Image (cartoon, rainbow, N blue to C red; front, top):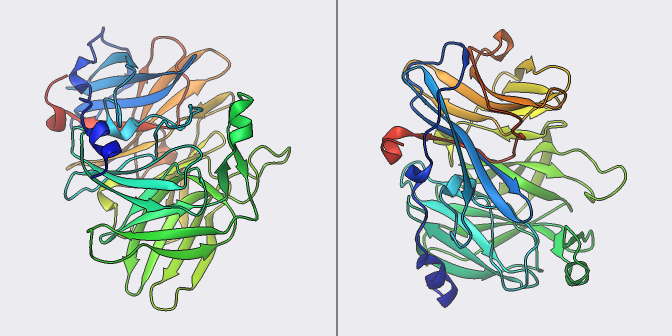
Length: 377
């Protein structure tokens, strides 16, 4: 473990139970009895902080939560699934890719980079978020790395077309990264077990991705699904992201790419499928909340309505049902709610709606934290 990794590991995470209870919130419909936990999202709090907002659900009752993410809570904040978004930072500051949890080991994996440096670190964290081990590897450039994926044997590394721009950082621009179509874009397979092989790179078309959906090994190939951009994000006609699939041939090194779902704003799948073949994709596109079955190529959707948009949806599997939760923001009425759906029947509308106190902007990072994992909150 490098000195940098030891420094990160020395910082104690914030206990989730510091989120304080609030008054009971009004609920339309009925909350499923087996939903017992916290549905949380994290977003920016000006000028440079983070705020966690959410709803505690249990026994058919919902209560409100809100807390500011304290500074210095490294490496992944009070809840690893809500690790801080990549934002402008002075050179030398660690930027973390969105952590992914292995459903078997319960360990969290992330990639840490430093603006302007080609060095990256694969970090493994315990359930609490404390770093247990790490190792360094080199990128092809000071690439912006905001996401990763796990297979049974590999960490998937996205070394794509957004590169740190030192001049933009000195000018204080909001996004200190620039599109470099001339930079070779590639996906890397880093063996999860140190000493079991070398990092192997696969060339792909120029692009960018901020969120991987999942990855899995299928015989002699590795399949990687992620939200993808094909052009500069700051262009006047910047292309909308779509769900793309890369198939990496481990024998020949060849890569095939295809679109799976066009014009997707957010996407997720069952977290229990991490590293294994997934069938169901849930997400948002415009004001639509959708479910797409990859095996049957059929889709189901719910229209949130005019002037409304949803944040990152979260899938929750249970013993009596499967649920999809989403923060929905009403841009016209300055109001927000948490919508709970039967995940396989989105078109039927929400089975419950929790009305939130005031306007809560829908965010792109959300998570469900069952009570069983963290105790009573």
